[in-house]
Image (cartoon, rainbow, N blue to C red; front, side, top):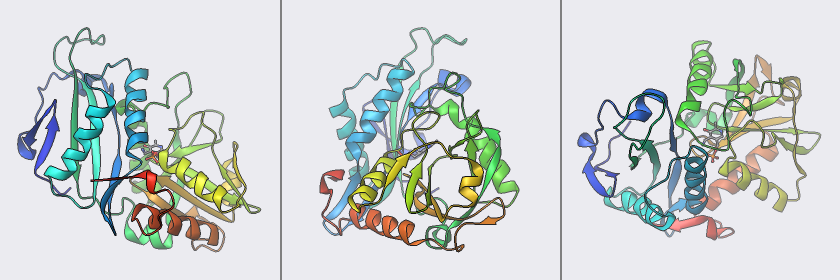
Length: 303
Ligand code: PMP
């Protein structure tokens, strides 16, 4: 990764190379922390952060679910995020706020350990690669299952949940795929390791309902853009074979943006090239985040 200059830690900026924590930091041992992934895009009218308010809201929701009281209010966190982009002089970047349980008590119960907040930002290109963005990626259905609703509360973007994602991602990469798609405990499609999944079937855009998945901000943005273009959008469970016979498929996420899927488990999806609906929604998304289309300018926070 490409280092930037400063990281915001508990209210002050610390040089990138000195942004350290104690080895007995509670979150490091047991995995309870909450985080966000946010993108800032370089646009026509300068740089802007995409859906900052929604990301700050979700960070607070994740922390609430995890019973971690963030020692700042939303306005302070919002300003700290903007300031982190500014001080690092980044015109486009990925921003990572992390709420974590600090050093103090050990053992599973974190007691009164301090709740800490760090915000880093760095340059980050296409998460699944430029080739995948333009030509589509190859995905597999994972041998790992996504969280049952009573094992993990997936409305929260909680660090420990990503153990499941790492296992699936490593397996997919080792088998020569770009990304894994995980099924829920009932066998229906849940989500990617860091993305929500959409398919197009008989002209309808279908995505997983909010049961075993993260409530993606890119997901809801894409659903809105699709409805504005008079597409029928439904949230309903679908199976892996529904993906195989889909006309089009793609994933959405802050890191992955809108990435077409051209193959799943060795089956070509549609023509094997990004389909017309995927392409038009991807173009609409990039035009908005780059400020080329003024529709939804309220989704952008200038830096
Ligand atoms: N699902 C998972 C598991 C994720 O990690 C992400 C990335 N945050 C998403 C879905 C997509 O969410 P968003 O569009 O808000 O980035």
